Image (cartoon, rainbow, N blue to C red):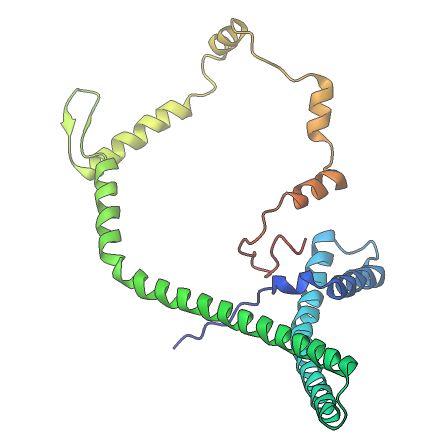
Length: 244
């Protein structure tokens, strides 16, 4: 049985963390300073950089989970200690502090539950999709067949005016037609030139030609990157538009 490896995909929520963004920028800067030597192509350099960044992002996710767990345990410990002291010696300031810590713990738990529900909803949607896709195979096949039959050429007329219905002969007639159509493209060039001279077609001036042939600028690349849509599926490398 063939095994399908799980494709890595960047968790875009990490990009909302300012510290993560600073870490990634620093990683890119360090990588380029170390490896950019003028002998490596830009494509190979960037592909290698993305491989390094993938490792960095993969390492960050368990790090944040540990940080979240540590923070929850620390706040819970602090809360228990404050509640114990409050029982022994009630104070208004301590009561406010207890309320503040409880709010922090609730906020962490709420975010965790929201994330869990989102993942669960995504998994349910995937299950629904794979369940439904198997049921629409039949109707989809029939629809495709009907469309193919409507667009298929069933008969043609040959040079003698005879109607041909044989599939093999139809293919031969069509091939012959296009061979003659494009095979003589250099014939009657004078007629083509004369035809073009009778029409005032727009032409590019030298400045426009040079502008089209010039190298793509960094500013143009940045403008395109800024217009990339968010929440779109990533490419084969796992990085989506938000990352760039």
